[in-house]
Length: 91
Image (cartoon, rainbow, N blue to C red; front, side):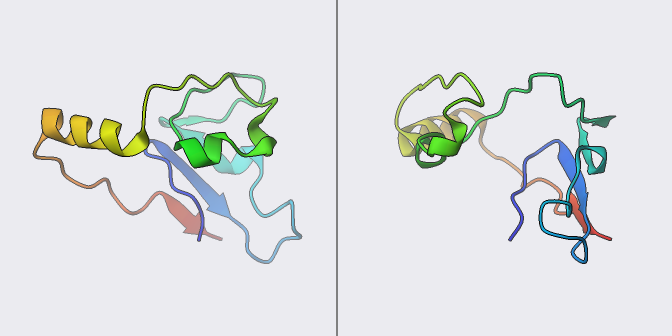
């Protein structure tokens, strides 16, 4: 299942070769095309952040236990509505 990030959309080409199914040209962030040389900020859970693949990709700033942060956020922003489920298209 493809990952979904709020504010980001992309088009996937399932028939393309591995490594070419999603290119930088297929990604839109906040309504603007992805700029490969630009730095983007996102939030990921601690298990993903500890993946060695992220070691050189970003500066990770920890801010607590994921579940505790989620409970605090939901309490401060209730009620919440889920985001649109149309962020990924297959071409």
